[in-house]
Image 1 (cartoon, rainbow, N blue to C red):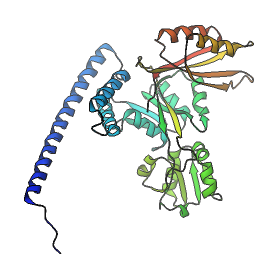
Image 2 (cartoon, rainbow, N blue to C red):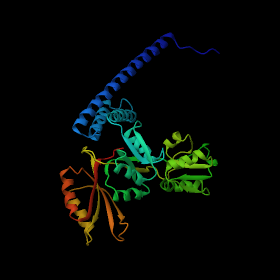
Image 3 (cartoon, one colour):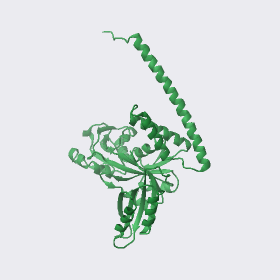
Image 4 (cartoon, helix red, strand yellow):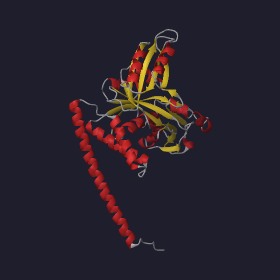
Length: 366
């Protein structure tokens, strides 16, 4: 039976619409080229005045304004992603940025870096979280991306411990929703004879593994990326890894979303040498050791409460060489340039045997 052909008038209408789309695409390209040239001019002016290339407050204002003007007509998540990639590409045109992260490729730290800086940035994988701190502190990269806490498993202690040995500053944060996939070469669950991943994802998928692969041995890899590399080399290995690892290592998803709890989120910190200026919606982080006297913690918390400071997190870590003594990691809303925050921190300093400002930075809204 011959196929039905489109009516000539429909063909003409379709052709007209496509020509209009082509014209719009040409205009978009022209405007994008103009935008990146203007961004480069901004970069030259910032170089003369020795100003930071990254202005998170300005970037947030641009995206917020355009989302409001869009009024939902163009799908908002897609528009936000497009705008972010454009802004990131223009920022990188002012000065190339290299970011260190816990490697190899396709770890969740790598994915967090892409979300923060866009896919056009240059990323350098590190063997350990401590190595990421060292690269930043010695100035070999501009920034590092490190996990600091997970909504299920809690604090990432290697990150907290690295802060005690480093002078880097927190420059930003990202709350990244985590979905774990079991991936392997064939995409078939029955082919998995060994499950490999970083200890945290293994813990976050413990119940699923117990129900579905109770007799399958598990291997602690240095990262989810390293586990994916194992799966790429051995058809009997199944890795718990990110969706980015599927493409990077040319694997297939055997089972999607095997985490035990929905809403699993990991908070990542962006570390660098100099925190950005206030964005209007910020956090401040401190590392303190309190004076050894009764009621010291109560006194410290009361000082912050008296200044109406909203604490979002407090985490303790023992001193490595002094049993019974603890360091406290404190996160609070506000920027050190804010009068209330600065005044409360100055008073808090008087109650501490050790006081370290880790940075003030834009609060994550992802």
